[in-house]
Image (tube, rainbow, N blue to C red):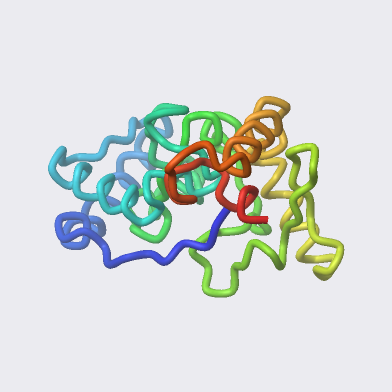
Amino acid sequence: MLKITRPACPPLLATRHAKWADDFVTARAANSNSKFSWRSKKSYQQMREALLAMTLNHCAFCDGIIGIESLETVEHFQPKKHFPALAYTWGNLFPCCNRCQEQKGEKYNPSLLKPDDVLYDFEHFFVCNDDGSIEPSAAATVHDQERAQVTIDLYGLNLPARKKQRRTQQKLYRSGAHDLSLDDLPYRFYLAG
């Protein structure tokens, strides 16, 4: 989970998010099973493009390449089921692979690390292991170690297939038998370590 610098909110979302959120909150108050929709195809396209550009087409959480290794989804960091007023808030939206999104689902923990937080730094919270896993950094405070573990658990960052894929990508990257830059590969935080 690399540090992300969030760009300005796309224009259509910036002008409409408050109204859409109000409508969604009202609909949910009337019917808790009310369905969410992006409301505007053009706004959704602008938002998706900005999110993918923000991460260079990587999942904001596992750093897998979106659209190649998984389906392209948009993650509501604070789930819209529990936080309907944030459903269209730019700072609550992240590009996400379907595996991370399925693992987290509608779960939320206030300790969850947010990759665009000003104070977030991968090396402070995590260490990479030779077996492809990541774990909380022993150098971090106990509180920060707990936050790292919550993030690992909620997004399934140490699922066996992910650990295996990190090791495979590391062998490829270290072999030099490619002409790819680090940003062209998944799991950049692991490969750079």
